[in-house]
Length: 138
Image (cartoon, rainbow, N blue to C red; front, side):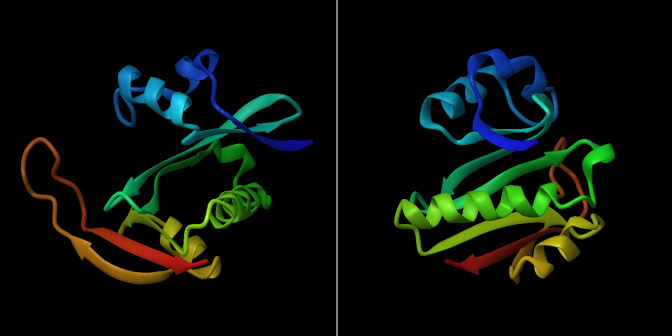
C-alpha cells in the first residue's frame, strides 16, 4: 500500500545526501513539515521537499522516487497529495523547477504545470544545464 507521511528525524539517512539537503536544512524541513516520505508497504521509496519562494509560493525543490517505483502512478499520487495540502493551506499557486535535460518536465506538464521561465547557472561549483521553472494555479 502506498502512503505519504511527513519526514521525521529518523528519516535523515534516507533524505540527506551531499547532493540535495544538508543535515541542518533537513532538521528545519522536519520541524516545518516541508518534507514528505513516500512509502510502499512501509518501505521508503521516495521523498518530496519544498520551500516557499518569495515567502508565499510553495516551491517543490526535490521530488525523488526510486527507479523501480517510477511510471507506476506513485509520482502522480504524491504530486496530487502535495497540491491538495497546499490548496488546503490557502495557497493559490505552486511552483517547481527541473533541468531541461531531465524527463521530469514532461511528467509535470501532464500534471498541468506550465513553463514559466528559466535560469542559467554557470557559476562554479553550481554549473548545470538550464533550469526551467514551472507553475500551476491551485
